[in-house]
Length: 368
Length: 175
Image: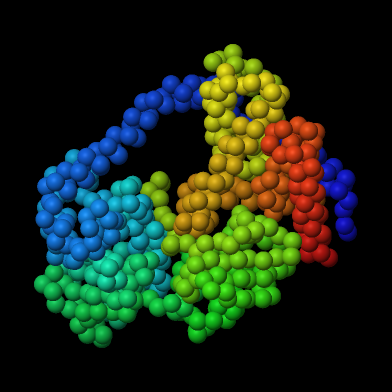
């Protein structure tokens, strides 16, 4: 039954006052501490930045030649770090970072891979049963990504062992090529293990949108992957190859890829995403009551006219939006426009304008 | 500093806390934001020109702090799909989706309206909370939000329309 404005206003004014569990004295104490400590805090934050900057300056003075040699792009352009060929990059990273104060090894090393301007690096690890691949975004500045992934690699989160822990991952952005170097003697293992390692590689480098992936050991030879034989290259993820579903860790959830058979048609992939069979670990990421009335591709934007049936909490709706955005990115779209007769919000998302697809998904933080 | 804080706390704390809570729907975030608001108030009180009332000035600071919070959330989400996973954000969403215990005793309609606030835009939510939960007049709401009075009325109308639709939809689901 429809309510009048007055009735809704009345319900609103009857919403209960919420009790604050923090006392006046606690607020005062916290405020005093924050206000007194703010100048000190600022210095603490400035220092690492200054050290890093100083470190980078020293770096450029100490090692001008390797930097100049490794790239055809001028030094002052960010891609020069990314474009470094494997051999030169290794020389640069191992000979320089050990001696520079304020630059820990991992940050410097990874800066070669994913640029010093970025704060996240990308990894992909299997679940504990090595059945699914979970793409991750790992902050660069909160310890090494291996340390962070290690912390999350347990039955609680559902993350398994990082298959690329011992590998060097290098991105040649100019040639849009990824180079993965394993230690000499590394082997992919059995069929399942080889498959998992290969998929880990493909998803780890997927955000860089490379055209080719070269793999080798330190001696420059191919790497044995069971029945696939000795491989020196593997295929990168192609546009429209995957859609995303939900993976239930015990206490964490992730969006994970599944192979799409939609032949690149977004309308079909939405149906696929909704029809994902629910099992112990995975289920559809799209709320079942979310119906798509019209799907229209316009350039780099996909427009989805939708309706909602039944009741969903904002978490379910956020997950639906996010799975669609990540999948749209995988299908080569830059943005998604959600359209509804009345709604301007879908979960926590303001859908009054287009939503950009994300760079990657499943960020993990080293805070636990 | 202490006398200023005590004055603001005694006069406005309850209203301030309610406003921030209904905006963000998370107790921990509310406590952090309320603290941040007090700090901004204490730092800028000497610049308060008296052109508006003390209360609308305080609430306009509160509004900016909560909007900043949502912007920061939005930026992170946009970049990486912050999702329900991980740490604070997971707690925020979990907390946001669960009803505060104070609301448990209330009617089903109250719970739906509480959840339905998330379907409104930030402006609509601001207007509705200030007008009907805080009991501010249209003039006070306009002053707090920096809107014209006609914009407050329009935004209020649109917000109520969305809440009405939420109740209708939920009602259909029950039938």
